[in-house]
Image (cartoon, rainbow, N blue to C red; front, top):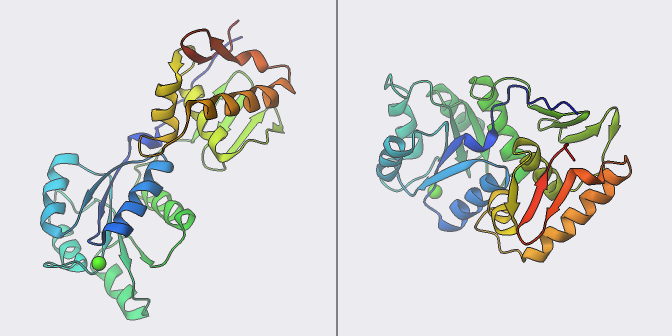
Length: 240
Ligand code: CA
């Protein structure tokens, strides 16, 4: 069967800089970003953020409005005046929901403004929207292998015109498999790639998800696509 990998810019390559002085919120943000497939770096104030900016060349900054020292909004105003960073998207986070704050945030050049508390889902959707507007996510976010199509925008996995019922974890696992076909991965590698290092999961959990995927694909006679490589791990392949 012919395999085609159309042009696709991987979300996981995009890097988000989180600037937030509250440890708990910063930790939560980093976890949400990792689960959404982004790379991330973190800073607790504008000074640290300035260093991280030079070291990590982020694609977007999530910036808390109220920071000790130079405030987030002031740092954003300065950045937007520097030619090197003028185009770098900034999303301001704030605990204050007043309309005039929002106007001020957008006036200094922030690309969006999110009021705490917000849901992880809303945050990720806003980040993706800003990245798309700024041209950092390009092309159709679709991966096709044979008649299997994974759409990362709509979170849909289809065979022909039939939609497969997969959990969010299984969707990410399929996303990894479909972008890395015909290669063998150990359970540890799959844990790192799909679940991320910060999450503690037993290796057996992978086997459970693999069994579920096989069952789902098996309904279309495609259970052989998820292959066990004895003593090593798993491989996704459309070839026998
Ligand atoms: Ca703060």
